[in-house]
Length: 235
Image (cartoon, rainbow, N blue to C red):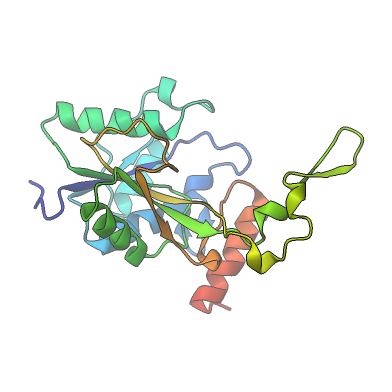
């Protein structure tokens, strides 16, 4: 039985059909499958009664179990295509647990593509959520350039600022902006919110920019490898 220390469950979505980087979730990343980093940081954080991987893929399930996660079900095919959102996957996992008599107060969705994630940010996310009336906390980081100075390119190939009124505004006078870091998302399961994740019911947990890298393309993968090498001083 769970020790119920935090009454929390981690859910790591990992489908088998990644296209831009085939078999991405179990592709070797410095000697371990990529998903192993998310599983291991969740286990090392000591926050969770269970660390569960939701996958439709037998090989991913085997790898996940080898590295300490539980895979109590294989995700149905209708929740494993390119159009299924993370919310649907997590809700399916929570329903499975509930139907089997396991009820949790907190759930943390951790992406399988987060080899730079540190346990202290997971801990901070839960601590801040526990001590607030918020429904969510999630990983975020600051934008590297003022968004008020950004522009788009029109159909004729010409530039057009989104906020031209800030063309002459000094960067230091512009409000700092942040974006989703794509690593983890805590929620109070029973607290329903009508707001979006990045709204008033959420607490952003700010990560240093050097620990944030989406891994969607091979270019992203190589950049993540470079950052991992620098952080861990690997030659």
